[in-house]
Length: 125
Image (cartoon, rainbow, N blue to C red; front, side):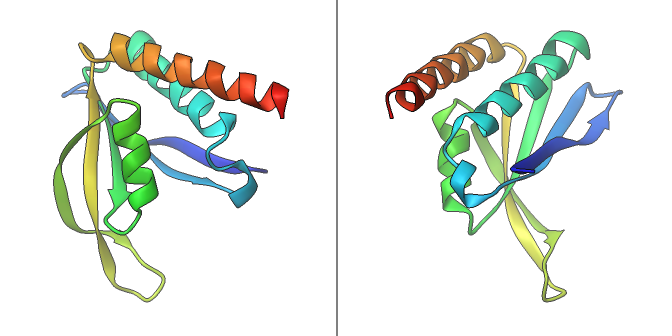
């Protein structure tokens, strides 16, 4: 197993879905798998489930994931406090990022472009 990412909360009334619990082993970070998974999950959310919003929660200390979210076009919506249970028993704060249905075509194209770039780099290297 190289990692995981899955649907966490699906609110059918508000047509909103959260993709979460994403983690990849160090050798697979910044690779193809995470982007491909995000593309597949968001495609299903928007195009099959009819979601109007897909959300991601990112721990406040996880700067790399925050940059990655912004890098593929997700909007930083704000912070939720005391959301994620931590190993020490405390609860961590998270930034909420989202992609709306009208933003999805642009985000989908950007992710597809980045995937192609990474596949080309992997073929060369």
